[in-house]
Image 1 (cartoon, rainbow, N blue to C red):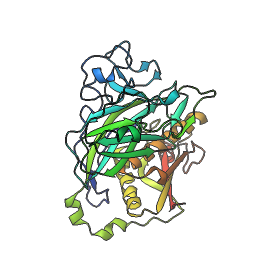
Image 2 (cartoon, rainbow, N blue to C red; image 1 turned 90 degrees about the horizontal axis):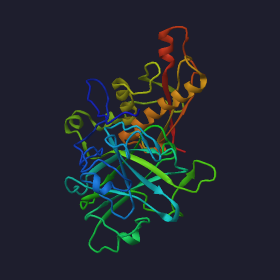
Image 3 (tube, rainbow, N blue to C red; image 1 turned 120 degrees about the vertical axis):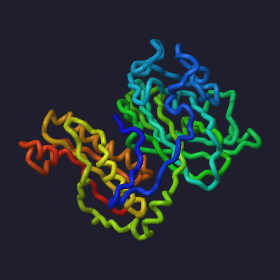
Image 4 (cartoon, rainbow, N blue to C red; image 1 turned 30 degrees about the vertical axis):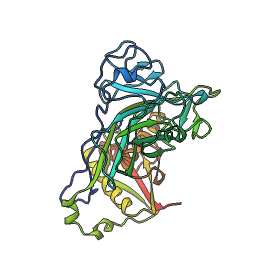
Length: 371
């Protein structure tokens, strides 16, 4: 499955990403702590410790402890719990503008002017017939509580005098329709200094929601599973910064519009999990892209010829996705990265030996100017 939380390690003579993430400011981030094992739909607020629902929408809680609201199988499909035993389920799009949300208090108020990164994992429920292209994240000074079941719009929010907000949308086009794996959602932002609570959901009505149909005759909604929520301060490592002059950030120079192969992004047979050496390789490329904002990257995944062409295509797609998601976790904007799997159709070595097959299980990339 997807890589869990990963952190940059400074290695001697390696050029590495120079931002560090501090401790998680979200309590009960993977919904493992509960007041009661879930036994019915719509009981998220009562069942889950620290979390609440800011509207009357009936957000759900699933946990392996339950036979009724258990995992991996539930009323909307099958989804393994990769981060423990529990996860949330909520509608981001439904008829008549019906919406569901989750809300959590932060461990402390965010500091004005500092940069923070919010991340969480989602998976579209199999029985959904729509998928959305945006997730909304709303920070507020005070806890939210509205007697509505529709979208928590700006009109509703600003009726509460004295509250303060910091709202952002996270929009991807490639990742939100995945019904098998957990997909990483991530963004960075500058704090206003009033953020005490965080709410996740879709804050637009149906007409304003960017969406697409996943099934013919779609009339229901977009239901997503949510897990492993994190909010961390992004800090520049003083030790690294003091040892690196500013020019070092752009010292690496990649020829544009040319195919490069990630030096260490190789995969074990039949796997798409990023190894530690691969993460270091990706971090190096990310640092270059972060220092050159006019550039974008295209990632191509390849396999050996063992197995069927259909499965190899699936595997190469997953290898691309693993690399792309790690780029995004590091902070690269989704509109600066694209990816495509090619299966075993483009070998660079003989598939008759293990060494050759290992070389064919690779990920390549092309850096170019943004369109």
